[in-house]
Length: 293
Image 1 (tube, helix red, strand yellow):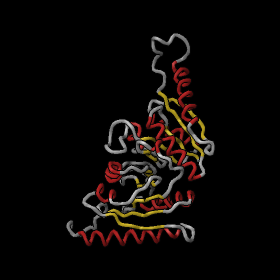
Image 2: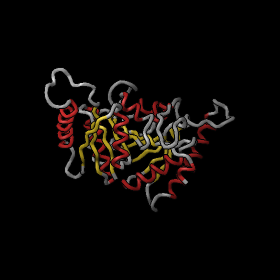
Image 3: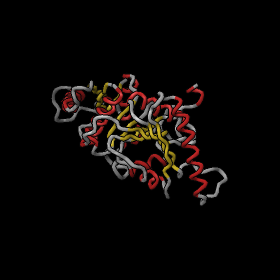
Image 4: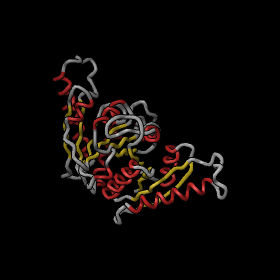
């Protein structure tokens, strides 16, 4: 298994590498730490010898060497430098070329509030990737947690939920960690139910959580740890904040139903969760039934 880490010589880049190390240890994967540089648009006036791309690649090589020096000896990591007009597109092309199963980036720059302040590159990845994208919250590099502790899967009933669940099951099986299924009552209101009927909402969410639990157990080894819970609140943010979270936890969510098959699109629910969570989030592309059959 290979994981692409989108790297910049910034705190956000260090967060991405730290999360990549955590995932690599948990999954027995190798890391491909990638820097995507802008192509030559004309040599700067102060550069009298040598090509602009060569100079930039040389500097990027030093940055990558510094980044890989922070990777522990028990994790295999490879440096890569490429050029592209679009950093996000360049990372996705590297992921395809290397056969990577996911892309890992750090939340940095402008955008959403909270622990994730997403820049334009991360936003573009979360709206175009063909593989799961993991976003490291700010400060991940400061954590002493070596491996993933538990995977939380936020289950809904919209198209793509089965793909998300199967992806979470495979990840937990590979990492040997427990799976927690969560149903947010604010996500999927029952058609025809009264908006204010909180009891009916909660009963439906409980029923769905237990059905999802039964489905997940089919794909897990006997005795594997699976739990299901309902998080309800006045909003998505309130509901997800009521759940207990610990360092080393990861949440997996599905791409918006607006996404094209095998592509991501960060939906409003995931965006709301990003505002209040301090754990890494993995967004999984949706896939049509025909493609999974």
